[in-house]
Amino acid sequence: MTSQLVERGAAVRLATVSKAYGDLLALDKVSLSVGPGEFVCLLGASGCGKSTLLSLVAGLDQPSGGQISTDGHGVAMMFQDPALFPWLTVSANVEMAMRALPRKERQDRAAGFLETVHLGGFGKRRPHELSGGMRQRVALARSLAQCETQGSEVLLMDEPFGALDAMTRDLLHDELERIWRERELSVLFVTHNVREAVRLGDRVVLLSSRPGRVVAEFPVTLARPRRTDSAEVAGLAATITDSLRAEVSRHGR
Image 1 (cartoon, rainbow, N blue to C red):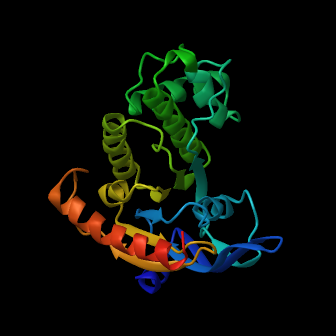
Image 2 (image 1 turned 45 degrees about the vertical axis):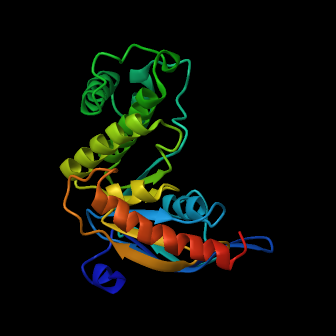
């Protein structure tokens, strides 16, 4: 599958990428591609280098070896923590991704992005007045603002829904899938939740325990929209979980 993606022009391409911190090897010769408009989920045990990989693709860190290309596509990143500025309004937090634009245009666009994530009318609120799920929606709106104003077509997501309750997470899955389709984004999504990966992904990539290596890929051909609690999602998730357990056991973790 990877070679086919490279041939048709990958939105993200990693070729034998390694990352070491001193004598600690976090990633070891990882090769991975994300096709245009593809939704790829990364799974692996804690400490296997998933977040490190995202940081490298985002340009927040540099690899120790190998090559990373986004083929000219801009990159936006959404973290596990919403990382909102508590002293700013919701609208102003979204506007932070559009600082180069005139003030009125920033405000108008921020209102539009908040409507996209179903937070219209909440622009003047402060983050502490919102629920955890609503704060994540604001963070998603800010990421979308970054995508549009900076020409980013690649969205990196580092366990963005990990701290949310199951119902809120399920609702945000629906929102994310809708936005991904409408905006034709390429998404690289890190999660520890196997069912979440199957619910969202076109493909699930399994990384080994440290150092992180690609040990398996699972295409997800189930029809959309999917339900996290459906038998089909549960069945594929069980297969992937067996592989994940075997990998963790092999490394004694």
